[in-house]
Amino acid sequence: MRINSKRISAALMSAAVLLSFPATAALNIFACEPEYAALGKELALDNAKISAATTALQDPHFVQARPSLISKMRRADLVICAGADLEIGWLPMLQMKSNNRDVQSTSKGLFYASDHIENLDIPKTVDRSMGDVHVGGNPHLHLDPERLLTVAGALTKKLQALDADNKQQYQQNYDDFSKRWQAAMAQWREQVKPLNGKNIAAYHSSFRYLFEFSGLKQVADLEPKPGLPPTTSHLLEVLKTVESDNVAVVVYTGYQDDKAAKWLSSKTGINAVQLPYTVGGNESSTDLFKLMDEHIRLLTSAFASK
Image (cartoon, one colour):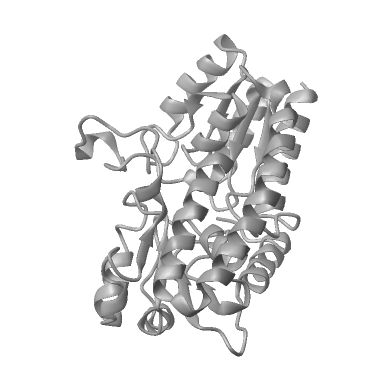
C-alpha cells in the first residue's frame, strides 16, 4: 500500500481526534476501532479516558497484538468492539496477554456492538472455500446511522452499569447525542434519495450498511472472495457486470489497494471514489456526524457527475 502525506495527516488527525485523556475520568475505555472510540467519546465525555487499537487507515481485520495495546487493555475498564468476529484474529490474543479479567466477558466490561442489532449477510453455512466470511454476519454496522443509534443506547446502559455514580450523566449524554443524531438522520435520508436504486461496485463489503441506508445496490465486489485480493480473471468478470448493470461508481477505502478500482475506472469511465471507512478516514471526517456527511457528499457527487 502506498503511503502519502494525506494519509499520514489523516492518521495523525484520527489519533488526535479520538484519544481523550481527561484528568479526572472514571473509566478507561479501550476501543477496537476509531468509530467506537468516537461513540464512547460522545456518550462518556469527560468521564472516560479513551484509546483506539486501530486507526482509520488500518484494516480492522488484521491488527498486531503489540505490547502498547496489551498495556492499554490491561488498564481498561471497558472494551468496545464491533464483534461478529471482525476482531477474531487479534482480540483474543490481546485479552489473554493483558490478563485483565474485567474485559473477558460481555457480562462485565466487554461490549460487542453487533450483539445489539440485526446483522446483515449472516451466512447459512460457512467453510474456508468461501473466503473470509463472518459467521455472525457483516460486522461493518457503524455505517448504518439507525443501527448505530441502537448501539449507542445499549452502550449507555453498559456505561451506567460500570460507573453507577455517573449514571444520570451518561443518560443526559445519550439524550443529547440521540437528539442531534436523529435530526441529522432526517437530513441524511433526504440527501440520499438521489442514490436510491442505483448500482455500485466496491472493493469489499465494508459499506454494506451504508448502501442499505442509501438505497444503493452493490452488484460487484472487486475481491473474488472476501479477504482475497482482486485477480485479473475476476476483474474481467466485474468489467462485464459494470457494463451490463449500468454501474456508475466503484468505491474503496484508504487501507485498500486502489489499483483495481482505478483500472476499472480507466476501462469503463466510471468514477473510482475513496470513501473514509471510519472517523479520521479523511481530513473532513473528524467525528461520527461528519463521517456520514462525507459519505453522502462523496457518493452523491460521484453519481451526479455521471
